[in-house]
Amino acid sequence: MGKLYLVPTPVGNLGDMTFRAIEVLKQVDGILAEDTRTSGHLLKHFGISKPLQAYHKFNEHHLLQQMINRLLSGQTLAMISDAGTPGISDAGFLIVRECVAKDIAVECLPGATALIPAIVTSGFPCDRFCFEGFLPARKGRQKRWKELASETRTVVIYESPHKLLKTLMELKTYFGEDRKMAVSRELTKLHEETVRATVAEQIEIWSGRQSVKGEIVLSIEGISA
Image (cartoon, rainbow, N blue to C red; front, side, top):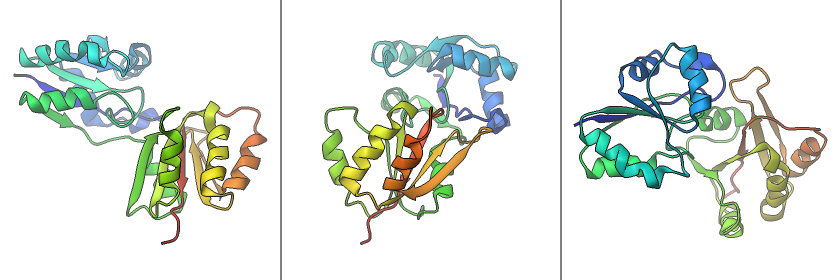
């Protein structure tokens, strides 16, 4: 029987790729990648030449059994996402669950994720926190905002740059304009920045930007108990 490896990749800075991650990717029979073009550039940079298969949230249900059959036949597979750790706001959960059900070995390497650097540098308590990943785009979004508004722990949310202002306006509605928060972007990259301010101040700051690039991590102070 084979084995599935979940291999974190850098969220921006290629220097964050671990020696062990490179070693595993060079040894497996195949690599499942969120975007084969993006991953192809990464693998080429580290001199890794292995068969790539696109595996992401839009095709994972269709390909799941095929991948399980490969593992049952004795192949070793590695899963990588475009950035960070597979399974964290990316595909990965379904195949891991099926591997566990079939007694197929699963190993997740420690490594990069945008979550931890963002909350640690936010200045808010990070001994206990609530990680939401990406909020629902439509159905259930309002309900989730209302639930999170009374959360006493630091709340961490992922967001895309083109939706940042919309999300900040929603935060103003449900959390109030005076709630403190941090907006982190371009983590680990040359232009990394973390802006710490109230919700109202964040809206003013980011409204003045002509363009916003890089994935966004929002760290929001919990309400006082």
